[in-house]
Length: 160
Image 1: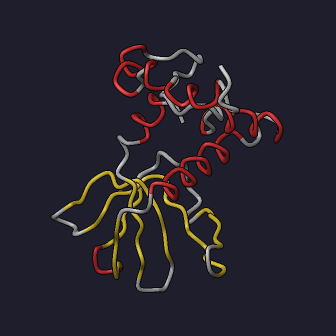
Image 2: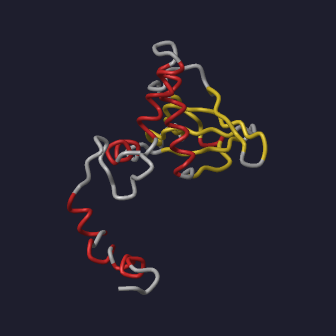
Image 3: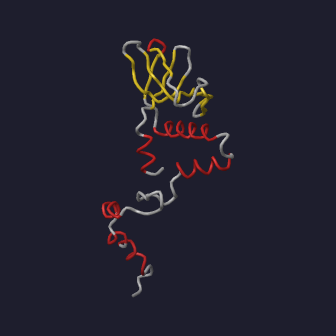
């Protein structure tokens, strides 16, 4: 995932909630209203857990992702910030559900791959256009030290 997208996604307050009815939801927490003792959420999605390391998302309420819903504090057993990988899957789900009906499945898959998949050799903070920030290279890459291993292999049989 490129840095701009990651910075954008980090602006959201993604929280998971376990409710007293046993359901498990994930949503963007907009605010807490002290007067009504309720949380204001957007993009609420139910997490269906099938078994060990197996789950999927379902719509929790049939509203638009931007519509604010309220959940009373008394209905929550626990809450917490989900793992980053779960947050990424949550965002992928929302993007995909918003694109359905506007793009084909192949087009949606292409968009999601471009947004969330890094190139294989993206170990030095490549930008989305494939460029590399030179200041980051200087910090983590020393060209002289990268050639040290070669002296051992230049002449593997010890002949000069």
